Image 1 (spheres, rainbow, N blue to C red):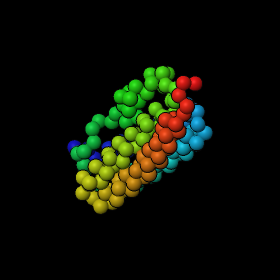
Image 2 (tube, helix red, strand yellow):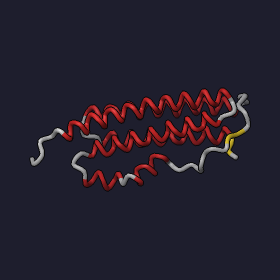
Image 3 (cartoon, rainbow, N blue to C red):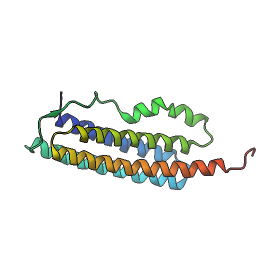
Length: 165
């Protein structure tokens, strides 16, 4: 059975991984708009990290959050797992349009984070925990939408390129 402390630490690590992922991948982006999105999202992930760290500290100082939730697997970086499952590094080497691959990966990561946070909220017995993770889920939903829209826009551009040179 995991405690709220463990759940907060898991979420904190996810946000830190997000910050690192977006900072690193911003360097790989060729389109200035996409690069800006990744740079901005890296800062938002850092803000989420700081927010969750403050919540954890408050909890550890005696916050009135209930006992525990049994809903998280052992921590495995969602970012590393997605990069591996999507073969991102290999795809980037072979792709004429690496931005699309990175944007798609980012979109899927944010969708996974949104769903994870909503699952925590749905299973939370404590109203404060429920509210925190609903808020986080909404934040991730905004990121998901941003990446999906940029991916769709860039895919449309790509599909309208003149083929053959």
